[in-house]
Image (tube, rainbow, N blue to C red):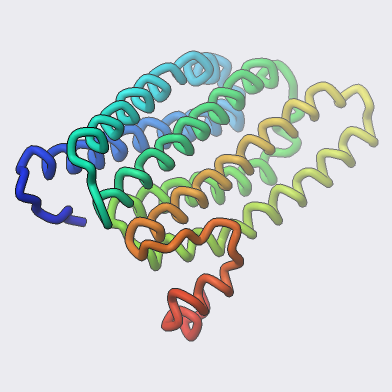
Length: 241
């Protein structure tokens, strides 16, 4: 999506620079999430260690982008869509940083789980949840890059699939603990990883809500999808996202 031109060329460049930095940060976070899942499913302690200690890179980028947004607001006093972009960016980088935190948590637990066979027993279920979540994150970043509200709304709708899969996995994990109490500690670690995956899905959904906010000027947080479609996207009701 091309940002509008302004009287101040520097202002335009600053907005484009901020947007590009968010995309770079998103790519880094997506890579961390991918590696976290890989370390978990493949019992790769070395990769898990790398994920668990690399979160500082994401934190550093969040601080830098946030500061740049503050400077743009102070110097240019943006309005309308420009202001919405800056606000959306501040919110998006917060969710990206939290996704990085969840990837770090998975990395820490994967280091310990690499010593146990529990993950192997639950590989199919964990893999399914992981692929749903990673796909959701990838599409959310794509929606932000193109400011695609149609894709954003589809991801918001698909959030229920992640919740359903997480709940199914949680029930399975409880069953494993009941069948063999010796597995409780390792199964709890898997549970925490699954919870982190579910949270990554939630943060990805948040990013999509900010895309809608920027493009349409509508805050759809805490609003049901049916209400959003009926009030702001009537054409999408017929397409049944």
